[in-house]
Image (cartoon, rainbow, N blue to C red):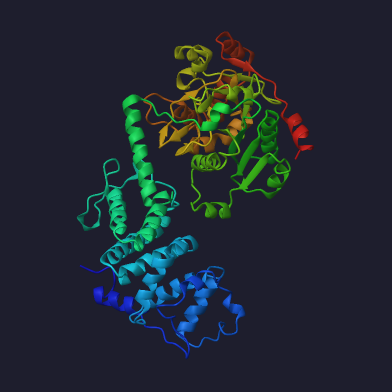
Length: 577
């Protein structure tokens, strides 16, 4: 069997020994004696060596080079930090001054507390690794070697994991697990019953307790490990909690999310709400969307330009409540993720990022599209403040615009469920095509949501918020709040967007439905009857006709609302784009 390393173990050992040649010294150079005055060093700060003629290059020896590098890196810290660094550098070589191990252990025995405060985690791990090789007691050596192995292994797998496209704080999904055997015939870790992480950490903690010198250092590193939200332990714990919640939700049919503590104190005056949207539309359309919702009382709008546009960004950000993100290559590179092909995934990612980043600035965040406009019979802050703390989602039902030949639609239809109408009546409203429509709508009937911010392990999707990968069930639908959806405001708009919606949007065929659904129907009409067949469909289902309005109004499925979007743009921005 071939080795991972060409040449096998002999070649691996040869590579390991390459950098272990001992330091050479110029006259007068070397480590301080074992009885050096550490107290004096503890109060002396390291100065920048580049300004000292005795420290700066040209280098007289390998020791001088290492001394300069360390003092440059540790400038501003105490001389103890330098001594720790130069001792570690010596003790990694094949040979070192005889007193180096004793001086290293004395340094940590007498001034370990100061070093733990001064040094970063990388240096602390280097120190504990050095105890593994040169500790004066069995406990120091065993604890140091174990922690060195633990952190070295973590560095390997955490580095490789970055190539998965996931950042260290992102747990994998429960449904993405590959069915494959682990190397060395190991059993995989059991999320809900596995105790390997606890056994590792607890055993190392107890092992270190037997030695007063290494115990503070080991305990500090282990505490930092379990408190870091970017470690495999935290990710596995998050996945464990998700799995438990999923199993509980499957048994009980509920996935209850907790409200933030501040929710109980919110009033109409103190509550802050905002919207997030990922858009790909003309600036005029984005301006109408933004202006309308600012006039509705939004405290912040987070607009992501899916197609970067400097002119649009400059116009929109003239208003202090509008925050624009250009979703260009630099943006996706900064997120550590590859730009998703599906626009729905990009929308959900951007919305979730804002949900997690605005917890201190907003109490409620809505996720809607640029062709969707909130309608409310009272100020939205008042409506949201009235929601009890037992609910964390406010569902906004959609009303779909009836298409007009000129101007902007003013009539909207409700789905049969919203109006409490039997599904069979859709055939009476839409005699030819009603049986193929879901709720009588061309687009979504699920609506969108406002979500409370500041709830851990939540993700904002297109139509709901999830916790632990499952839909949150403690939600409410506030009366008098609707989402006016200008999905197909006229025939030209419907025809222009047909192909995209058939391929990637709401007109995709739904193979799970045995009957001829909307997607299949539109595909059939386009292929068999062309634009004439599509127009016949559009006129019956979408057009604002007196006949359709009467049928809808008779069943409580008609809503009328006048929008002044262009006026809002002028009032909010001062001028139209």
